[in-house]
Image (spheres, protein in one colour):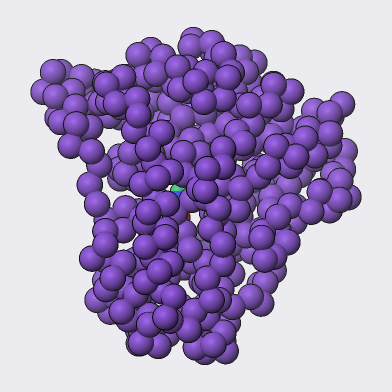
Length: 379
Ligand code: PMP
Ligand code: GLN
């Protein structure tokens, strides 16, 4: 058959997890915690299943869970959402991203993405018959060069996708960045898709600059988050999209025929857990900052050069001192001969960046970090 996605192969996350298994490597590749979600959340899930919450959830999510999201967004970002119209619960952020793009972007239009870009963005754009316009982030801080964005906007630009904290670099956007973006989209019909799945994982006392904090941008944005990242349960695949009523209505037209609704027991469990443990996401920065700092200390004696990590749960490392080869080759060598699985950056670029950087996930127990560090320090 004639392929609709000629450039797409198996995602690097599956490839590296498979190689990690084959070579019995410590898996710091695919981003997921190797520790369990809070006991109270697991108990709430079991209770929901035993209490008969096993049939279809409401199409846009349970009212109670949407209510919890309203409270959170008001508390953290000062935005008052309408519980009925502005929130849609989805089967992970991945579904929300696909639905947002499918709902907004038409054939022949352009979507600006920043490289390295999370790998589910471009296929979703291409399936609409649209084109991704790639702008590389500026190293070493992975900052957005706003002049390049201004130059890339055309009458065909329908969407700009941002991701803060950023996967894979951990870079975070500042309030000034959001002002730049607002100035660019003002007086256009460009929609902003803001991937904020790591919204609660920002370090060193910084605050997450959500688009939801910015009233002008929020009026034209779809903001996506993921319970998987916040509650250590990536396998449950529950996320949500926030957008003003008119945009949400378009979003829901796609969502209702893509999945219709999301795993009902988990919605009940998240709602109960959020209500009884409102401090969970407030404690997340300290929780992950301790892991970040521990991981960096463990790697200090290695020949890896550590880049700064302002947010998210990934550490970028420059491996030039160990082997001078491209990141695809080095990540294969590392999983086979170094006993550690990592993620190369090239798959997240339109044009191979030529950098010597790998991404290591530190959402791991001390034992896993220590085992990985012992191997990495021996290289
Ligand atoms: N966006 C980014 C930047 C991510 O890192 C991830 C997951 N790692 C997702 C979206 C998808 O989230 P989910 O697992 O909830 O589908
Ligand atoms: N988002 C995770 C990461 O960046 C992977 C998710 C997936 O495997 N699709 O590692």
